Image (cartoon, rainbow, N blue to C red; front, side, top):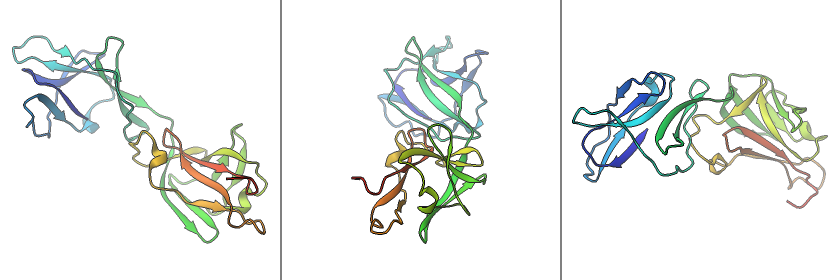
Length: 220
């Protein structure tokens, strides 16, 4: 977490929302801006509680919660099926929350191979495409997605699954992962339509891998 507030006497700290314990923060940021008091800390060693961000006055008085304007969208990487989120309470105070997320398999590699796309995950598991009604639209052979695997599928948006788990972008910290590195496309194998896209892979807003099946005869 990297945080800056208007400069005033004291130090930034975290206060456990349950116990009230105040945790001092050791920052590795150079405090070289006289108009601000800033910290940059690694949250990996924090426990799984929620914390209010507070300023501990140098006079020894009680810590004061840090007020914030409405926050812009932000996200953090998932670690052990949890991630940190900065939130604004009803009173306008800054809070650090440790939020569980849906368990998922992480994408480790995606590669165009021959006439298909190889998808590798950790943990591994049978790869499939799950439709909007949670029905299995296609099953991947040898972890390779091909046009033949979706030949009978109607145009639709599907989720890529590995062993029954959604596939998630590793260490995703983007609010819109769709603008990350472009993903390979799958082209139709129908005669005369080999230059038309049959399937596009993309990242959803929460960093899970989606596959949109297209009609190669339709306008794209």
